[in-house]
Length: 287
Image (cartoon, rainbow, N blue to C red; front, side, top):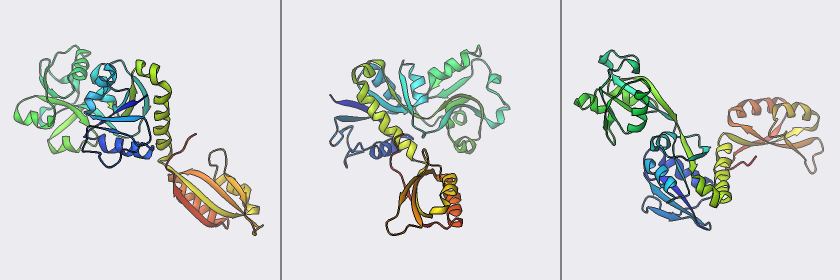
């Protein structure tokens, strides 16, 4: 039973999605970027590379079983799909932006019937209809930010991450429609027929995400300092403590800690007389 997984073929989500697959143990070999679909080595998984905006449509139609795309693209599609996991990358939001010189400070001030350029016509239409306004929507596939300068549109609705592109094009954000990040989606039909297979893939992705900000720390500590060390290295359920052959005065402690705590933990352990302190990255962590 082959599981078909849709992945963005380019754009802001592509590189991180492929990295996630590799770190999850889904080996696609060396043909990535040259083929539209690849069979994973030693697994019954086929990865299909399509546009991020097409992933929800393909999942809804049953062409693929599950996919990686943005919350924004899923919402724009209007398809009834299940979000299975937030992937913690591709953060952005769909913003309403106007020329700096317009004097507009809030989206509610935009005149009814104004022209808006966007790649998200459905979300844009719904947003302004909820304000009781109808906008003249000009659907574009890219370079929204130049449309007001060219006179094609009065304002834009586009994805924003840092805001630097808006600033470069003398645009200012006056409203936010939806917050987005990369997610895993599937249809109810796919979950019903391949639920355990899908869950196995989701669990694999999640183990990578959990491990991203973690470090594995090992140290030899004086035996009489164990209680103090336990407060420094709480770990997952507490540190692992091992006897050291031939060195009865010391214990080996192992713990998983947050990356942000590494500096403090090492400094505290050194003050307690710890030796042989070692930290390593963690590829995957299953709770």
